[in-house]
Amino acid sequence: MWYDTLVCNCVQTTFLGVCNMENENQKKVILSGIQPSGELTLGSYLGAIKNWVKLSDEYECYYMLADLHSITVRQNPADLRRRTLTQIAAYIACGLDPEKNTIFIQSHVPAHAELGWVLDCYTMFGELSRMTQFKDKSAKNADNINAGLFTYPALMAADILLYQADLVPVGEDQKQHVELTRNLAERFNNRYGDTFVIPEPLVSKVGAKIYSLQDPTKKMSKSEENPKGTIDLLDEPAVARKKIMSAVTDSLGIIQYDPEHQPGVSNLLTILSSLNGESIESIVERYKGKGYGDFKKEVGAAVFDFLSELQAKYKEILSSGMVEQVITEGNEKARRSAHKKLMKVKKKVG
Ligand code: AMP
Ligand code: TRP
Image (cartoon, rainbow, N blue to C red; front, side, top):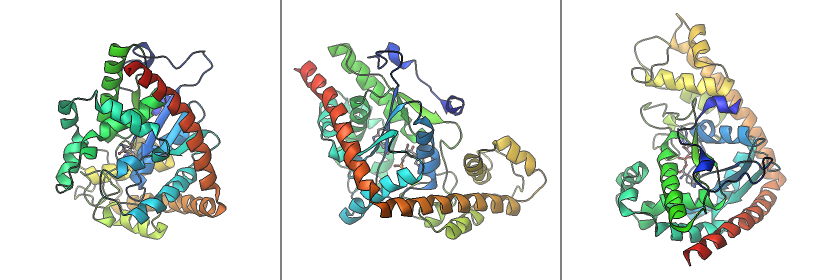
């Protein structure tokens, strides 16, 4: 069951804010998004999209392409335009069913930018200064520390609060932003009366953080400079297998889950376990007394099979023309829902 693999660190949602469950049959709401700032990686899939797919049946789900967030870092316009389509195709190829989920583009729903501004006015400079991602990204883009990069978490809060999301499935690195969203929602509710649902982050236990294959102390990231460290969902499967075979490990020669002393091996264990559904303990048991070569071959084969299947679906989806239709319908539904909340907020603020 999905609940077994997730950790919710926060207090029960509905007691603190507005309740979504007007009647018991109404589903709880989920919202999440990924920036189209690079090609999706195995990390984006295992840390985020794979979990989204599992939630579709039980929740009312909104999944967006966070393009307004992506322009806080300079993007090549042609790449950004192309990725708007290909990332949605990848969402669907990863198993997100457009019949069950509202899939949309953030910048096509103007309420995000509008509520983002309102929330900017309720977010403190000190709070934003403490955001780890802001500190990391400022260090990486020292020549472009723009205001958008700084206020980015308030826009993310708007994304979440517009849809009354109860739960926000994200990787470990985004938890701090969801915590800030909770604080903003509570602050607003305390001042103006119940307006926002207080959301909780949902972080999966396995796969919450997939590390670079070349530096397993760093997150596998869309923006990593060394392509050998990252597996893109659109990498040739044979190339991806090679990346696994040359992944950095250690000289201990024991296959065990010990992220502190054996980050490389632990990362490969996480990848295999997330892909084949076998527990890490069981994989470790199977490899007792065996070497890294065989282990890497199995991880490589799992990645090869996964990518081959995914890419076949991806090509079919892109050539079918369904992406445009999914976006049109998703945007429309998202606009309707977001507009209602925005009107309520404007009224409350005066
Ligand atoms: P990003 O790819 O950084 O825009 O992140 C998109 C989503 O995928 C967020 O929820 C991240 O937390 C998650 N994510 C990205 N990279 C990883 C990774 N290496 N391991 C786990 N989750 C990740
Ligand atoms: N900031 C998130 C990231 O970098 C993307 C994102 C934007 C998001 N808005 C969101 C995630 C709302 C969850 C909910 O990965």
